[in-house]
Image 1 (cartoon, one colour):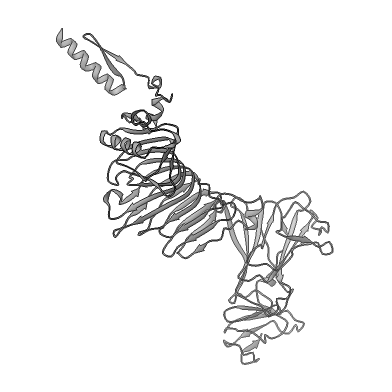
Image 2 (tube, rainbow, N blue to C red; image 1 turned 90 degrees about the horizontal axis):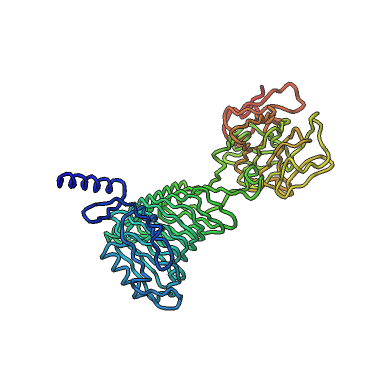
Length: 524
């Protein structure tokens, strides 16, 4: 009988261990029961199970700091000493530091060290210039912290490894590493869930390297980010962080990525010397035409290498260069452009450089002019289904930035010379406009101006393929007489478009700026 009872009790103990039951003894009998933590309420009427769930179901004692140590959440009483005592108790007894809802004022710096589980549901209001520092150990097991609100002062977190940290509100949040202090040597492999953070600082110091690497940040609205210190902070990934009207100073680090950030408003982004391969993916466009107009680029100061701000839409679109002019290309009229050794000079204003044939308007796309100088004018013409020029203004097939319509010529044009910026033409299907024609020419009062290049780029979704045909006259050098200006190389060919039908072309015999027929040029 005793043996049978012993075996039964062993079975009950094993069953309870594996399936999460508790054991209640009634006399000689052992009874299995499942305890419902949702029925346990603290004095603040919060369910204890809600706190435990945040700790990944860790079986750990939760100590209510307000009940046990008498902290007062009235926003006036100084809780500095009481919170320090509570933190020491939580560390020594391996308990969860739990601060319920309330507004807790602290007049001095607060340090909470070595506490693995922290839940701060209330607001801690620090005196001006003071900080609350929460430190675990870079070489210990993971911590789990939830911090609702740190007002006025600074929240400093250190010594985190493979941990989960949630910070809902903070005036300033600093992730701090110190290379000479083992507990603070690094912050790595952690998950941070962020709310409204006015300033996020990632910083390290010490004679030895302190580093903040391989962390993932989710959400958050952040106004200022600073990444700096005595060592590079690498491969920190931000997902869906709301960055708008913000400042980023990334002075130490490589391969840090910011995915799906808004970047609305005026933003200041600086990549410091020595930084590399950092990328910001912008998710927001000012309007439905911005991307195809190529007007969503966010400027930055890049003193590093291969750092970028790009649009999320880039991965779904392709950019094809359909026309290019530079000192080595052979596709322009010499009556309009003079070819120099390293650059180009405009020989005449209002000279046509490039013009497409009719383009069928079936899918949205954009045509972008890019140059190192704003010396060019763009004309766009609309045609109906019969390929007839439309001389009445159509308002829903393109959206030029500061553009105008000419009722005499039917041209849609920019008000001023373009090239460096504001030179994108978005195009999209319209009931009346079935075809378009694009032309670019040298701008007004540009004769004698020098530039290095002009690129015409088509931008279009990967799923579309709009055919753009270009006349052969824009694929070679042409002139009406033997070239008499510019720098030429041996073997260059200039095709005759003049009235002398006995001359097909002129071929260059020498390299240089001389232009003597028979010596420098030969007629073919």
